[in-house]
Image (cartoon, rainbow, N blue to C red):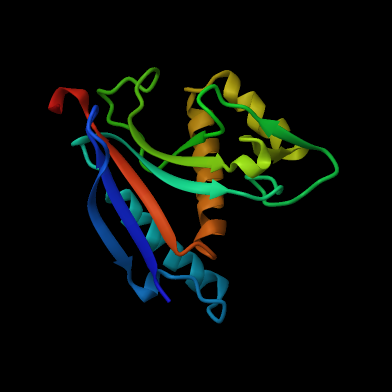
Length: 183
């Protein structure tokens, strides 16, 4: 059993091209027989491998996950009252994670750094489900998207979601966009 990490590069207007397909070593995989601490250490190593794909050459790198259940995409629970998150470009939800952008890059309007992209399938009406508890904490952050507290909260959410999926997903897609000045 292994995890395959596919890394593609996108240069507009050309289609994405495969840069590399990396098999993650066994010490970075989830094993049920390991202790929680050992699995957490393995996940941190996996996360560092994903973060290493992003470099200054790229404007941003997205890690894609498909959420195709009726469970909340943040806490993975189903509650009595569920909501659907809409996004103007489809069902995708973007959460920043990883190291913050360089000091010389304005974080206000720049799509720089690492992002977790979560999309839903048509089976669930192209919307990502979220429970009312998570919505109460998620929406206040959306009002001031670029303040440091929002970034910290997004990083925590993204890492939590990735950890849950890391336990069961065996294929990961990372797509890096080349900065416009390099085209």
